[in-house]
Length: 360
Image (tube, rainbow, N blue to C red; front, side, top):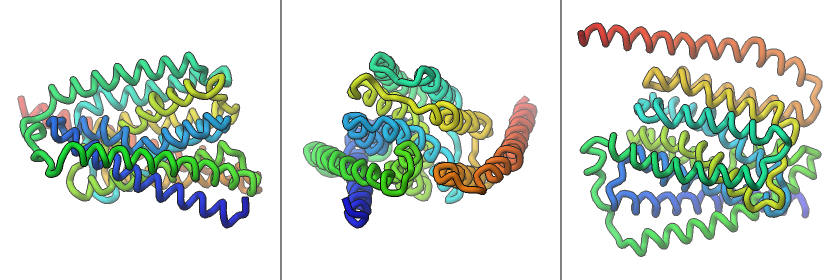
């Protein structure tokens, strides 16, 4: 395939994925609103699954074609980008208020599942049995999340928004058209990404962690940022956390189920990228505990992702600055970010204690 056709396939794949996800999310959200599901639950389940559909389509296509590195890299890279890139950009647009359910259940689950993926991949493969286990956990998570979300939802959440106009058939039509576009777009994106990796001598894992991961996360970017600007911040945060959970349980789980012999995990992914995914998920605990993701923390998230992506590119090309850049990130940037996050966490604890004392 010529470079022009490769570029065209990538662009066409991105466009189809974004349009398809937009139609799917719109139809699914309207259907959920008809049965009075709260905004947080919509963000954690319906919207999260819809915006994760590109990752699912690409991973299944890559797994079926035997491109295990691309399949795994897409999920790991998307989860890293979702937190650092999307939450960072959303918080820069407007500080994000964190719902209690996220702190108590969903973020700890995201961290636990991230650790679980590393343990499952430790032998070099996420097997078919591992995929079945993830699928079972997904079913339990969906049931529990909806049950808990309904119980904690406020009266306003359950009564608003009003039932959308139009028919159920129209909403189902949006879902089906969105799914078709996702399938076609994923095929084009996988083909273009694989050819791009070969043309530039970059591994499929790196392409999956960067180009494909960001591309398939475009629906999450659009959904979370627009939800933030519209004041629907429960959907913005729930979309990111829910998408990461879906990526692990649904995308990796189903991908391992359909791939012959499961999904192979590259040594570099086990040694570096999966631990980074765990660290990024774990950082959410102290940040979310404060109840607010500030613009400062949003900026830190975005800078951290830029540093991570830069390191991947330097490492892939075996650049002379690779070692120096890695040392700066490891010994200067990361400790500085952790220090700022720790200060914010301690400040949140102090404010909570003061509020508790005033209440007494």
